[in-house]
Image (cartoon, rainbow, N blue to C red; front, side, top):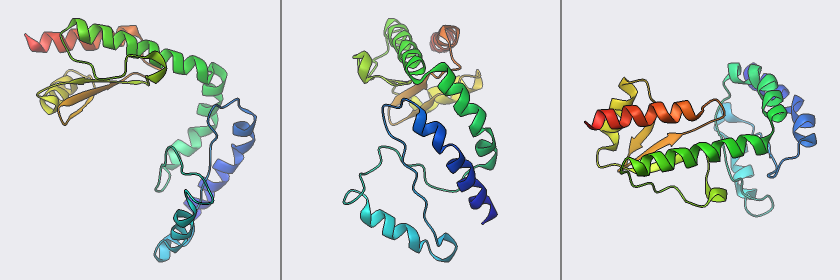
Length: 175
């Protein structure tokens, strides 16, 4: 219970920062009650979603990781200082680099081609997606591979050197 009270306090402390940020998509905070005695509180909330309250585009249920909450303040400051638009542009730039390099390496990329439809994830087809994930992980490159596809995630902390390293390891493993 103390963990949840601390989590709620940390989240509510960030409301003024979120409210003053120039966000394209609003942030909604939904808190339930009675989890210890059968999750009765969340049922009432779910019943209202889509009817009285709009459905969320993203939902992250569960108990918070307190270390993450402790770092939230600084992380939010850094993200807002850099700027959401710059972060989005960087992720899309990396996705374009990945797409071009993967196509040059003969891979079929299924990520949308239109820049505005891209995110930080670039996905390509692979007959051995699980094996490719394992081989890349052994070389220190983390991707997700399953269901005939591999997802490569480029983020704020990645750069073109990371793309070059990934492609180099991927093509080297094919030999």
